[in-house]
Image (tube, rainbow, N blue to C red; front, side, top):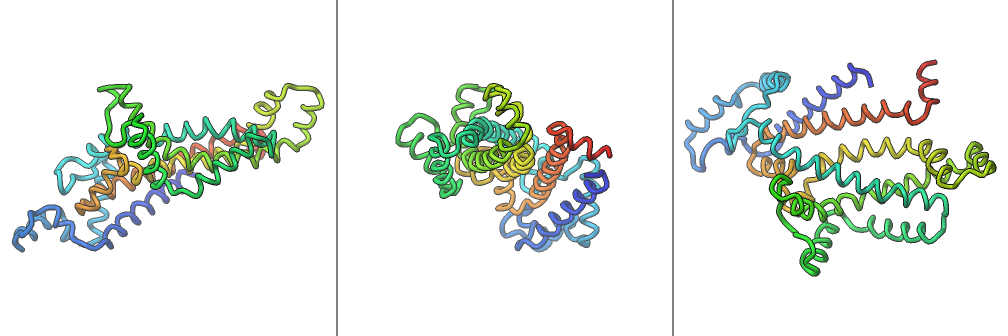
Length: 311
């Protein structure tokens, strides 16, 4: 992706976010004044925050501040928006990255072995589990995990959050259930995707030649097959990590986790639209950066991509 295309996409996202939030029913002034405020007080609040300016002027005023690192102040708390995001973003990032790593740690060995021994015991068990997971929505799975491991067995805490700096062990215990909830759905996608690509790669001439030379199975699977079969997995991983970062809303609400998702929901309910704009814009920017990094990784995975690009 060229720099020009990247900047164009960022601008389109910013404009779309600003315009869509303008279409939401309700008046942001409700978050600025107490209930029952007079019309004069409402008009004064509207003028103080520039809400009475024309739409185009408000957009350029907002995007101009964003380009200078100023996302404005929250209507409800009067704190800088960037400060609120900086407090919540590490929580959502940790949750998304850990869920991604857990999903990959499970999917890689299962997918590789299922491709190497299709129809075997591991493949049959994986197929049954992935089919069952597909049938359960993430929010229902989260509630089920809370009931089984939190209420019924009492092994893990169900709601709340403990910062790592306060108690590392308790912090990890609170992470287990939400990470399991998010990783379960991605395990299905990664396992099935890797299995399909690996089965095709294992039938190619260079892999059959490696088998004929008597190379160890582990070397054939990891050295000759996995790297070439990782294109789809890497591409989807970039999409998934972006989706996880911006889409942990339901899981954060179920487990009362103070992340970006909870911040967005609370801001929408209180009509604090300036916070929502900032969160969505930064999430989209991070999503675009991750997918650009995925494109850069292709030549490393397969030298043939470098040759095509250089020709």
